[in-house]
Image (cartoon, rainbow, N blue to C red; front, side, top):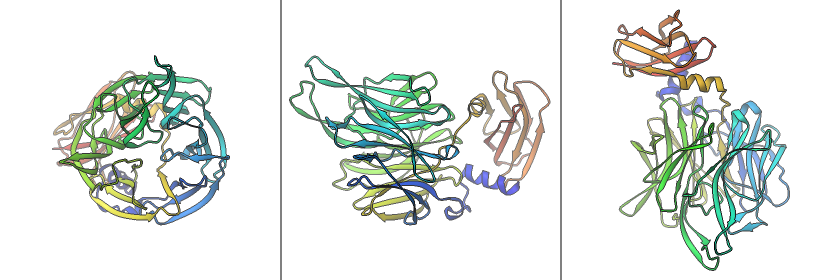
Length: 447
């Protein structure tokens, strides 16, 4: 148990001493080539992405090609989800033939294909706990000139019932690309249908947050302002669309810190850089950031950039192409560069995906209902719960995983306080167990 607690503590805080090679297991990936329809299911070692094991070929129907950066791996389902598109049905830069593919994560056999009809899809994501498909849809509609404009909305589709669960209109969104992420200019027809106009486009890959049941993505609106859109998937409502001063490529949520890790492009004095940093859910860039590299001439348009968070290893992996190479940068949570590896893309690109956990509603509810304060604390720590949720046991562990305090809560109160005056200043983990045997771990700073 002590070893497990130590690993848990290192994973939560990014403590040095747990090397990448020791903690990062092989992850699923798809090897694809934009010039062919060939698609391979592979196993990738994140510590050295040049170590690739091809597990099996995935057979796609004729004319179908993989849509980059759409891979989702659900270990509990033993399935991978990804999207394909046809290049024989292009309309205004969009393909009208897209579909969701569900394949066995071991054999690569296609288990289900779900066509997306009469719409152009961007930024697809999977809501695992509800078996729902979400995506930004651009549906053509006639304007005053008799031509088609794009009616843009976020759509949540129930894969069990085959019905639409939610549709959230996004009239302020500017969109002229099919794949995410995308930063640059794109040519589209003007409303009169006769002229081509250059449109500045910036849109990130989507970030689904299971514990909050929300989805966030960043995009440039029709006024040219980059905004972070946050959407409640339970109610189907837009929570906020606050401005951000950078072009975001990808994001991943850190439940322990309650913030987003973001891969983004910024510009200062005419110099554009690729950066990794922290962002609040309100879209504020935090001071904790690092520059990955300076972007060169010829990189005005960016159509790739992936950020993965290995929670168990407490490591962030950035995947970005440069010339004919795919570079894997690995950082710890203090944003120190752990390793930098590269592989040739001549034989194809690789999309990697750490398994997306299926978060049960009971855990989501419990995590949202528990508050721990003050933090930092000195003498007394209070654990507050909401509604009918009761705390059964509170256990505190030090920075080497040693149990330093254990409280068997006998009351049925929603407010419970424990004495921590005997604890030395430092960082601790507080394990909170409810009467329903749901357990939650939170970080505590003692001063």
